[in-house]
Length: 114
Image (cartoon, rainbow, N blue to C red; front, top):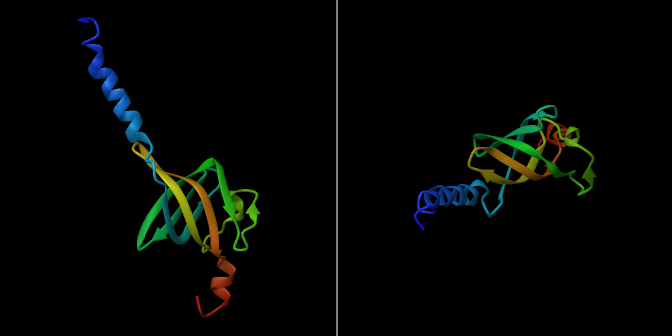
């Protein structure tokens, strides 16, 4: 029993770190893409006046404005109005699992209603 006492606090800290590392509920929001970086696998969007940087997960899903799957991050464009779903991590930026284009950039710029 005495040998286990010094190990218990370390084990408890490890369990707490794993529990805090990934939030259970995904974060969902809408915003305007202001940066798409396929090399870094990251996007930046403006949400309610705040810039939000997202790392794009390897298994992330990208959908166009018709709900069809895009083949890669390169299908997203600066100026697209998107909805994102991500998970927050304690040690870095959120990781996006899905990004859906709600209004493509070309439509926003050709129509006065956007």
